[in-house]
Image (cartoon, rainbow, N blue to C red):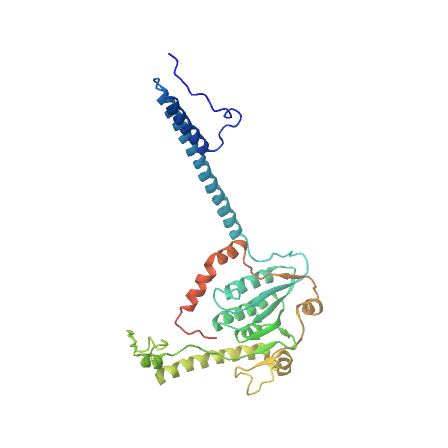
Amino acid sequence: MTEPTFPPSPDSASNPPQAPTDFAQAAMNTIAGGAASGAQAPGWERAVLEKLAMATLAEQRTARRWRNGIRLAWLAFLSVLVWLGLQQGSSTADVSTPHTAVVSIQGEIAAGADASAEFVVSAMRTAFEDDGAKAVVLLINSPGGSPVQAGIINDEIKRLKALHKKPVYAVVEETCASAAYYIAAASDEIFVDKASIVGSIGVLMDGFGFTGLMDKLGVERRLMTAGENKGFLDPFSPQTEKQRAFAQAMLNQIHQQFIGVVKEGRGKRLKETPEMFSGLFWTGQQAIELGLADQLGNLDYVAREVVKAEEVIDYTRKDNVAERLAKRFGAAIGDGAVRALRSLPAIH
């Protein structure tokens, strides 16, 4: 006995369904057609169920392909991201070609920043180790930062100079102040623009005190410590004269360390005045007159006239593609929030 079948629609042969929803619609049209024609012969239900099952399977296969395709695309993207992240962010030099090596110190000198001791020291070591580098130039444009980070860089400059017997020159762009000058003092010569800002040989610790405001608002600070001086930098607690004197003694000691580094680096070139170590800063022209700098000159001048190697190769560590993407998607914002929440005043 032949099972009855429903004839295809007039255009089904020339335009077969392409999407899973088309299969489902075709099956529903079949059911509707069977009911309308009054077909009640045995077996027609089976044909309808078969078509519905096929439509469902086709839809599931298509959805599975889409999911797998998206997963593969994400896997490929992440693989590329990881590969880029493993690439070195610094420039590579041809060790056989004589050149002037440059390491930039830009922005705040702080742990985790582009001008951190970790990144600057790593770039300097690479520059010194390359045989083609005839000298290392520190290209500085920084208002200062951490004396600890600057001290690490200063010490490493002196070590690398003695080890590799190569000169180090500091070239100042707009600013070389505070911790940036701490670093520059270790160089053999300092070149500036006549309008550069140079100096600020001093130390500060900044913060706020809100005790008076809290009294007016009727807010009580509940701070519990083990150790009478544990919370003396807390901005919501009063500061005693003993605590103030302790902090000032610490700053004075760091200041003397800074002065010692400058005197050691500049030697007899320094024309010391009462204001020189007071935290004041000067133009590049004034810095030359005071012995804080040696002469006017930019990077190209130093490479051409001093090092005698006009080709300049930058060894500065730079963010790779993966790091830039990470910052764009919020890593930098999170880091900024953490810094904003720090309660301990920083020393600059």
